[in-house]
Every structure is written in C-alpha cells, then in structure tokens.
Image (cartoon, rainbow, N blue to C red):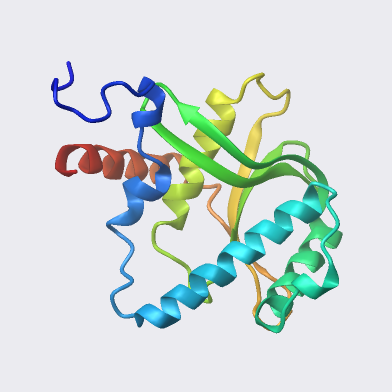
Length: 198
C-alpha cells in the first residue's frame, strides 16, 4: 500500500514504473564531461534519433536538417540501413514490463539480412561503449519478447548497440546476445537498487 501523501497515488499504476534509463542512470558517470559539452552531445544525440526515426517511418528528412555536427553519424546510419536492415518492425516503441515493473523505449527492432529472428538495436553516438548498454539492451529484449501486444510471430534472437561513426565510417555493432540472460540479471539488480534507494 502506498503512503496516503504520495503525490503519484492518483496516477495509473504503470506510469509509476521507472524507465530503463532511470534504473541504470546512477551507474553512468558523466561528471568528467564539462556541462556545455554534455549539453551539445545530448542535443546531437536527440537529433540523430529523431531523424533516424523519421527515415525509418518513411517521413522525408530534408537535407538541410543534416547539419555538419551530425553529417558523419547520419552517413554511418545510412550505411547500416542499406547493408543490414531487411525489415523494420518497431521504431521508438514504448513497452511496459508488468512482471518486473519497468518501462523502456527501444530504438529499433526488426530483421537483419541473413537472420530469421528479431534483433533489438539501440542507436549510440558516443565514441566509447557505455558500461550500462548491455543491461539496457537485455532489458529491451525482455520487453519485446514478453510484453509486446500483440505478440510478434518471430522470436528475439539478437540485441546490440550500434555505435555510429562521427566521421561517416562503418558503425560498430556491439552485440550482447550470448550473455543476454546475465546482463538482464544485472539490470534487475539495478532496478531493485533504484526502488530501494530512490
């Protein structure tokens, strides 16, 4: 039973669930990044995600939107799209896990060339891999596999972070498939800690 003075007591129960970002946020160390630089990187990442969503949703992306700060990342994404994406099934989809109590907005889920099952991918613009990425993708895997409504006919077989190149080169496909159950266990531990101490 929630405390009677809880300001969120009138909200639907699923809106109280933390997101994957919230659960893992305390383990992302950004203190070494100057605030101005972090703000620029955050804005750049948002633009990249927005324009990728538009492109995959068959919404025209005017060339003028691809400014010099994201041109390399955009070229890197287009290379991946041309070479690897066979079919897009989900983009920027919010899902809710009712069994463990968390939400997540996954960037992309679909079929890659040469695969028969689904792959969950998160677009990344940092040049170094984040230590929470593998747990984030494992959590997304669970959301797609267990909480997509209606259920998808194909199983989830792979999950990865796609590190887009700032210079327009081939992106790095950082795959977490082999140890997904372990990474999901790590995520659940972080989720439990978030609930206990937040």
